[in-house]
Image 1 (spheres, helix red, strand yellow):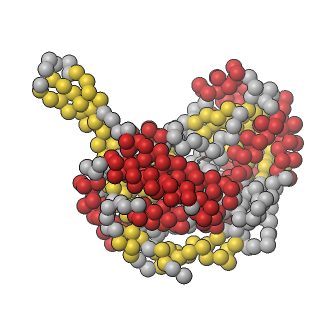
Image 2 (image 1 turned 30 degrees about the vertical axis):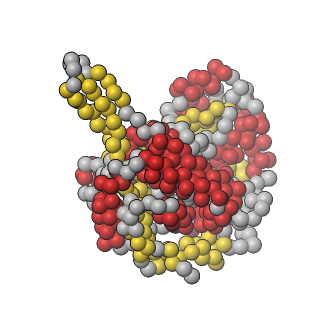
Image 3 (image 1 turned 90 degrees about the horizontal axis):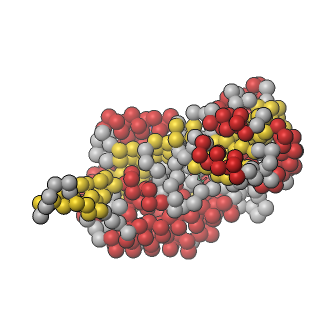
Length: 477
Ligand SMILES: NC(=O)C1=CN([C@@H]2O[C@H](COP(=O)(O)OP(=O)(O)OC[C@H]3O[C@@H](n4cnc5c(N)ncnc54)[C@H](OP(=O)(O)O)[C@@H]3O)[C@@H](O)[C@H]2O)C=CC1
Ligand SMILES: O=C(O)CCC(=O)C(=O)O
């Protein structure tokens, strides 16, 4: 089997370290991927530092062209890359192709942003002085990504970093290196100068930690768990660098008495169970008012009976496998915790076996949960959700906001008054009305509040806040 190597200073290098295993069929090795050493990380950082002066001054047409070519190739190969994504991560093929298209659109968007770089010219408060405000690239950016969006999250960190003139050291999740390797290969062939983009695959405890320990990186952008996010923060404070964190969520989906039942059930099923619940924007707290509660639970339970859990590549599969044995254990541990806490298991909770050996878990719904239970407070990151019964809108909003997290928040209602009030008062970075809490656009800001996120927003033109630094220049006329 070919070994997919690391890219350091424009050279492919390294020997095999990681077997990329298909969670829908654990007998299948999707590919072999190199593992970087701490010396490789040091070499990658040095290469990115050496490449920075020239790349930071490169023409915007060069950046535009490389990003555009990359987006075009990803789009042209959407079926193949989507299948790779489905094989390595386990989301269904349509979801995986959708994510691949989204990655292409992100490169396309930032190829346009490269042509729209702008500053401001202002008069000084003093006579005969002009003031120019410009944005400059930060320097060498460390990118550390999780396993749950193997192509979209790398794309939405890499594309703006390059667009604004930074160089990169990129460590994808060791569980799913395939799509990341493919993006880096495409960028390399699209003509990026040596050292601008460096790929160091391998374990977080070795490769990621070596990045955190480096005083050379000017910024680290990270998506993953709260625990690792804290490490990124502490090391960044120590080294005086900028950092951006996207971490967990415990996103609420409020369903009011006046909701359209079909809309509410579709939104809740999608939020909680699609992509196997492995989205930081997934909803695992369904907060439902008294008058609609029983109808909603009955209709959602009926809906869950129609969802097929199976091999991600099989047509007709609605929910693919859990990503690996470790995450499956987390999910089943939480199901046991929910039972012991006294929530009622209304659907699912069991492992299922299919034609191919994989980590298959039924979508699992608890009812009669309270917002104080651990299943309502801690991120599970699997196809497990609970229904919390509340009296009215005011209680629903209070429960929705009673969480350490604040990424996404949803409401199903036909009341303009409640929808408007919720949009203003939900303590979250993103609010969804009559829509799933997950599934976002690629051209607008993404991010949260409280324990979910730290630093400037990702995506859209707001990405410039993290990937650039502002300079104010005064000139005597
Ligand atoms: N917000 C989100 O989108 C995500 C949230 N999560 C949450 O986190 C839980 C655990 O998932 P997990 O994959 O373990 O999350 P991690 O935070 O461990 O992984 C995210 C990334 O950080 C890397 N990493 C791990 N340790 C270090 C370190 N010491 N220094 C630098 N980088 C490091 C990982 O490497 P590697 O894994 O390759 O070793 C991976 O690339 C999930 O169950 C879920 O609750 C997880 C993924 C995404
Ligand atoms: O919901 C989405 O579209 C994006 C979710 C996401 O980025 C995540 O789970 O990390």
